[in-house]
Image (cartoon, rainbow, N blue to C red; front, side, top):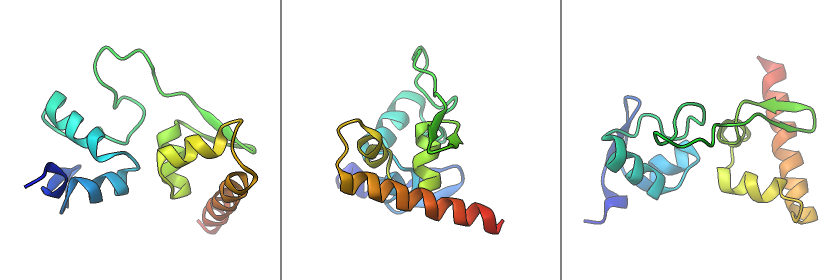
Length: 117
């Protein structure tokens, strides 16, 4: 059985596969398997702040998109309901008009959800 098809527990939630867990966390399946291999647990995957590999000096940095500030790229992607890799592409200087429009739509949806709370 391939590791992507194996169940995994992350922060007390059981996911039927690494792939489904990765989608829920906004990371890649390899990020989950790497965290399991390095730390024996995937509980810190997708958290951004404090979730990195020991010794990694690339601490999470705040990200502001059109006036909305997120504590990290991972959190921004999670809040916007997209993957971290999508977010990275959409905020890049080389992003297409369509990608920028999708980012704006996701941000507007997020702002509406926040306003309802």
